[in-house]
Length: 357
Image (cartoon, rainbow, N blue to C red):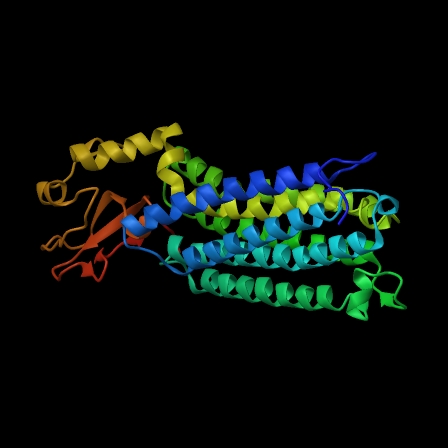
């Protein structure tokens, strides 16, 4: 094996890819761990948590494959590498393409699953939209995985161009994948925003929710930036040096998607910046309806706490009470309808979201 590809030789780019891969997976890992700790403490681990954990595992695999490719010279000029090192570098990069696509698919599937948790009482139309998005994310992801595997015939021609072969045009193939990912990002962003605008909440509360879900714009931005690097990366005849810019942005894109997929569930940390969080906290700790200035009935203020949900019963038909909903780990303002029957479910208390259907 030749000298390690971390910055050696004229114009070497390997170190940039290596450091980006390591830093981004550490950041993504820290955010996912924080999310899982919060969910575990509340005993509310669900499918979106499993999916984001799987996405992180493939992101780790992406880092391993990218760093291994750099080790064999990926990021250096092809003419500077021994033939066997160039082949090994391309083999590792071939594996990295699968890890990248699977990590991205799982992360976006997790975000879509998270919407089921956030909008449990949403309309049938919204739930079917989420179902359709999941199908689109998974089916397109699998299709591109097959395309990646068979982009060259025979497959070995991908890492050994000396073999007689027939391959896709790299630029068209990469751009088509980027366009589909940008489309998915836009649809994932539009789904919750449309629901937030229909919620019966104040303007400051609505802005807070929109801000949280709009964090997905960061992932969309990385997808767009990566798309702008594809033309020059794919058309470069230097097969171990030319694709580096697009590869770096692919690493950033996958890990950024994982990070922004976790941030809404870490809402208590970020929402301290918004005044509506303080209002909601004051509402249930003092027993006052901050917006209306009315005190809540004592039976509600005495029995509801931040740490556990208690059984509430009574004969106050149709009374709407503003509470700070801790169910499912998402502290959202909700309306509670208390009837003459027990208003408890398996999770504690039955909630109806602040939504206008």
